[in-house]
Length: 513
Image (cartoon, rainbow, N blue to C red):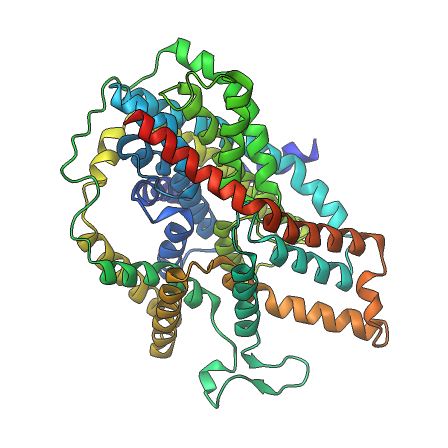
């Protein structure tokens, strides 16, 4: 009953005109970001962080805006997948397999609406999973000491490449680079400046919001400047929507699929480093084996092949919030960006968040429910508008992204030095993306590096310099074991899983053509 009372308090916080307006704005902007190929949830949230801070919003309104963008981007990724066979982001890749063949059959409107319903069910059930599971994780996390927290952070870094990773060495390099960047500034224990090179502006360390906007948003602009694509991928293509609402028989046929894959996707989201991509892939693969063993309908426009990955990846998006809120460890790239927002607002995610800032947690959870209903109501009638957004050429979009980044960061800090740092991170992000080095471990290292170092020092100091204290307790041993397994698994299975994701899309996409 206490949970429902807290949820009622959350709705009392979320149901204000300001928060409802922010949720609506976030849902719309998120859907736009998700629909445009290449941006995706991480970039969408990173681009709009300056907006939240420039508007002078408090903690709860800022999170309501940005999590609505997160959920909206997960919804929006399906639009270009179904209409153009171009996934808006990696989790939407599996939606291409049956979504585009449906569009070719003149069922684009039905596929878009069905995917919206599947996204709603996946996200709705995942939000209930967040309500039920996060408080239980908090109880376990209260048993953590400094050694256990150090092991937990190590687990986050070692599993961040995810099961679908093909190169753990690049993930490890990115994590080490992030930890190195976290060391910039004055050492909190000795008071000695580290890696500041005499620059006074670096004594307080690097601002991770500046790093995030540079790495994600500005690097996207630099990549555009390099490739200089003048037109949109959608230009010159005829997009027929057809009938907008799917028949009730189609929804009933897909309902068991949506329920099963929502559960699978949620589990994939809760696992550190797995994320929505794995949730989408597992959901599609398991559903195909269950209902189409002969391979007669999946890949050829089966509605269940649209419902499965959409329910799975949206459930994974909700599941990824569980470890972020309960343990302070992000479950995906986008939740790592949201973690940075919490820290910038002087809110520390983890076990004490539910007791020290219950208004933030429960207001956020209530807003997720509200945003989910808004997205369902918005995405079906406004499909025509969102499809027209695909016609926006990058030469118009990218200057807007650059403008929001520069004005927003200057509005937050008022420092021209931070603008130069942001440009530096943008150039670094551009170079790393060309080398296929993941950016999320860098962000995680910058965010968690100081906490990881402080917990290591505290654990060693408490046990009089004994390094064995890091593996003394059963809990820390379990965390280290999971971390090692999580690092080794992608080396064994990662290339195979990633190859299967791309092969299945390429093969079944060519069949549908």
